[in-house]
Length: 257
View 1 (cartoon, one colour):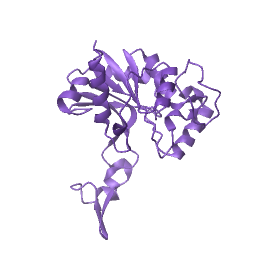
View 2: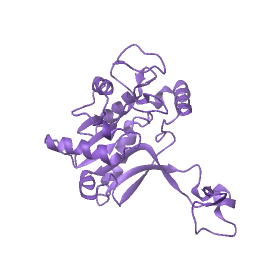
View 3: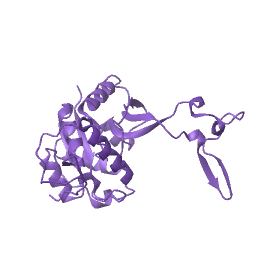
């Protein structure tokens, strides 16, 4: 069985939901739920948080993740591509004789990814060893066949070359070809893809279909409110965190380690 490491990206500069990775949800910082699911899955040789923020690093260690290095601040900007911080993480690990055959990206902005989700994805990945990677997807809610590009005072369909009678944008959703969008649940790939192809996914990608909230991503304040409402009605949606809360916390508070 190949070895695999969990990489959790948790930079400190989130702007749309400030400090969301350490904002409190149901008694623990958001980051804690991804660490807990990764640990409980039993899939990973190590669970590592990549961050440029010392406070986030301390919180990660409290919840039993490793922080063997800090991410350079120039790899933690709003527009920094994933390939940069992943290359940094895997290179640092190799330099300390901690190389792994595979890696998985688990984004802490999704608190509803369970240990069972990770186990299911890992089993799927191992069934197709000739693939480069696996990526979580779900059926898109806004179909690209109904999307437009503005060109001056006119607009044109985002997807050219579709049918004309009637065109996609004039058809009901159920009459359109199924299209899937990637979500925040997880990604798994061979480490060699990063070093040989300069990519986190490569070309041969396995779709991993998530259920209900497994791919939910907190990007905006309204997403946070939705998650709070869901947890209030069903706390079991969250992975079980066995570590004590880092401090007495209030809902929505930002943790200060």
